[in-house]
Image (cartoon, rainbow, N blue to C red; front, side):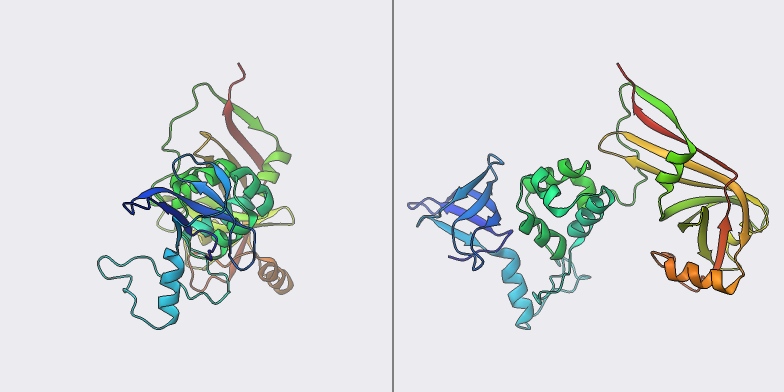
Length: 308
């Protein structure tokens, strides 16, 4: 008997073949996948050390799909009706699924290591690495543990509601707005992310546009195209806003920066900005014009539970 992390251990009745108990293998004790295993049981959500008996077998759903793919067998086209998620060949190269990407991104955003997150979620660090690096279908119990460890929800980790605006959960029973000082505002702006710039568009109408931004040398900078709406900020005083909503805790914060915007023209400065940028603009296309906002006013507020 050999298993991989994420496989299911199924215990059946010797007489009827019906499943009596099943669980997800969340820990291996031998590199070759032989028993014993750490199993999170689906009926109790408890993790126990298991030495499988003759009435137990391993269900390798994900790995069977991968082996079929590497053997060259046909795979449903993602556009066909009834097609399941594409499964990558098991080449050893990290190729995470959507859940793995969301888990890894949320873990990094909160500054947690894999071992810290695994301990909080009551899973093995090796299994967390597997989830983050390979397409996987973790059980609901595992997702609940990860959501609790990361301060988010199972819905968010699964990606449901990605086309809905944030903040659709219930408000706090006793919310309180707390003003943030300039230093805290700078910390929340951090080094980069997605924010919104408010400008008067070329057609004379007000507009609010999301942009990928960087914070460099106390300036908020972003890339755009000369004929775009954000480019209308150049030569004017603009408002730039960044916020975050914690759906699980019904809390959040927002930071507003106000100041003059100018285009960066000095070649060395442009080259330095391009070299230090964390990401390319998500909107794509040719966006080589750098705009810099020097905040003259920086304010923010945070929603927290009122002290009782």
